Image (cartoon, rainbow, N blue to C red):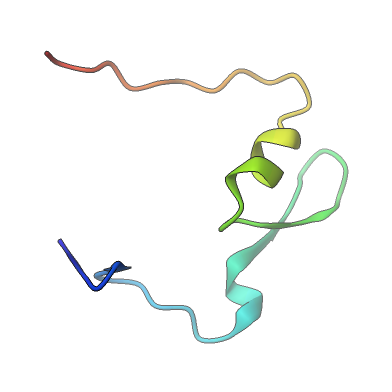
Length: 53
């Protein structure tokens, strides 16, 4: 559940907590930017969870 668009649970302590290093090219990625993350897949496939209708 969210409150005002903010997720419950883990909260970043610093701005740096939003970043990870790409294991392939070494660039720091902002995990809040889906486009940036997807551009660093380097040809890897993304597993999708099945949807139930």
